[in-house]
Image (cartoon, rainbow, N blue to C red; front, side, top):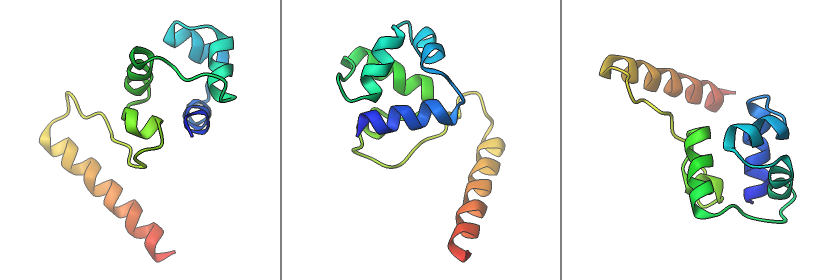
Length: 96
């Protein structure tokens, strides 16, 4: 499961394995091994990946399908606005 999630997150940001590796201070081979299911990152690196992509470690490991949005530094008004946008999008998807 981790291998699918990490690859999907990387591709959704338009990152190559090389760029992700550089950003996380690991080798391209390490990223490749994660995506091929050959290895799983250490707890420390897993936390770093979660912070990088603004997701929970549970999400990375397939234990939770909910993602969260980093709201640090936003006002309550901005957070409320983002919540409304999400609700509008979910409502559109339900009516399709």
